[in-house]
Length: 299
Image 1 (cartoon, one colour):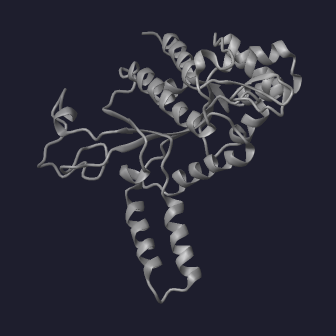
Image 2 (spheres, helix red, strand yellow; image 1 turned 135 degrees about the vertical axis):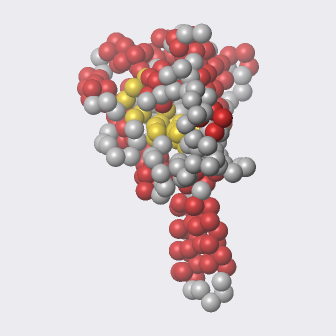
Image 3 (cartoon, helix red, strand yellow; image 1 turned 180 degrees about the vertical axis):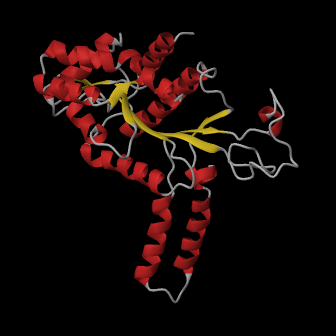
């Protein structure tokens, strides 16, 4: 299957399982990933739907309303399926035994030490002689370290038999390669965190900062290499995407579910300010299409 076909299926699932049309106070229809208070957001979102061939009608087939929380959860599941299927096609470029899930980063090699740190902080918080402020500090520090990303991709360590597949590179008697997490050691080795991906069905600038904070914690608290850190969104306004995408040092990149269609929609509507920001994000290598993500994960 081609990447374009997987992308088409991805859009179909989003259209069927998440997209709903609502009415604003004036009775105008808008998709549930648009901001009803913003004309540009409503119009751009409707144009994007046309271009991904999502022909929705209000209350189509009696489909029930969907909350923002439900939409976000389904968006995570659909995006994880797309990444798993698309990245799987690139196994010849980035071979490995991969894991696709949603779980705490403490289950991975680079962050396993944080589980013990959290346990110690919780024990401190229970001590009666500690002041209230100390207990609150211990609790806060423990929780701040532990992140449960929307989507995680991990790689299982490699057993010696696979390492020696083409030639005898190492043996148990050799006093080499004793610490690399890539080599499987022990009965229950922890996988290596390859990528942490945040899914944002929509973006509001205040909430986008949570994603940045999580990214910085992933960078600062690791023991080992930094995983890929990315975000995926359906947000129609580039000025809002910018609140997450602009700048460097935290996220690798932000990926839009339909970037070419978004660009065409904004040009069609002649939204000059939004188009300028979109080009800034694209030319600045801060925004890419969802189809780029599996290839970037192969780097």
